[in-house]
Length: 301
Image (cartoon, rainbow, N blue to C red; front, top):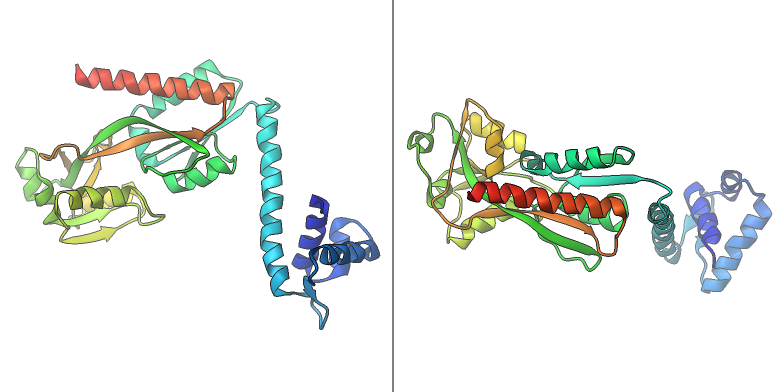
């Protein structure tokens, strides 16, 4: 069975009609009908109900359709990735979670752009879980996220263990203390966590940090975006735990306080495909290591 047979089958299943499918494929109807019959003979089972119109898939046909679509998608992804390996396309696609842009990542991107002005650089905002699928599917080349995951096809590297800080309303009692606050004090408030979906996410990191200290928040208000969380903090709805680099995002109505508890962190994780040795990916990852290491050295001085 060849890929063209899968394309023929998918066209008939989509159109629910041999005539329309033949027009879509730019072939005549009789050869198309013979090809579908040959597929069914090879599989030893009918894929379409030969009853009333429009054509309907059998149970086996529905199963075959789902997997045929995936195989065709993988064939397209393989062609895209092969062209990149052959350097027919000088292009690099980066996926990132928004909070990573408040740290050294913008400097990494500037260094790469200056070093490779002829490479088309694309940046896509996506959650860590989305980055995993995009990496394995060849839609991005490098991902910067915060959630650890396991995949044999993806190489993971922690660039930084970033401390968390408390974001509290400017008129809140915790802001008035003008000193570090404890996780117990945070747990006594309404915790604004983000993102709501997909999970697991940074929100689960925050909840796990509290539970590691035997704490449960009084209430949890989940939102989708960092900016929304800070907006609700400003409105006095609750407090939030955010990466320390977010303090660069200054607001008059939000105050940031360090935590008294040790090792409450959120990692910044760089992810690449396991066997991707393209010059563009290699250079970017090198710049990322150097830039994050330099930032860590400055902070420790």
